Length: 225
Image (cartoon, rainbow, N blue to C red; front, side, top):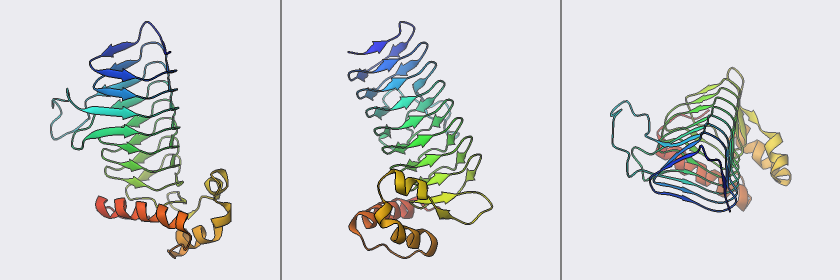
């Protein structure tokens, strides 16, 4: 059973799973699919048209957003419909802090964190465990690698490789916090060799992560930090 405040506005084809809580004055516009056990705070807006300067008044009536399970959306989060691709999609166990922005055509994987007031450019891909610091901005078509972090107030105009830390004005470094948090401590040396020296990892689990990132990175036609 869901707990939905009486002031919440639900418009169009909106499918909501079970055990979700939606707080006052939030707006959900379909087509929209929401999974289970999500917490949607006050004044969250999900389903407005993507902000596209090429066609700012485009028809988004049939554009789909899909949201997974166990996500937290704090107050004033905005999630926009796709413009160019099939959908805007959010995975499971993500944490979107207040005022963060999920743009048109975004693909957000599991366990992603957006700190307050993060702005993500359209058609970006945030991979598993990515962490975007307070007030950071990501360029369109960005690919933010698995278990990486983008620093507070950073403007990232290139892609960020897995397990790395992007801090403007400093050399790329290893995100040891994520390595330990997500259970990759036994692979720390080969991860460090990859991040710092671009040496290909030998273990299957780390190699598969790098392969997924490389595929999306090459498709993006963006540079790499």
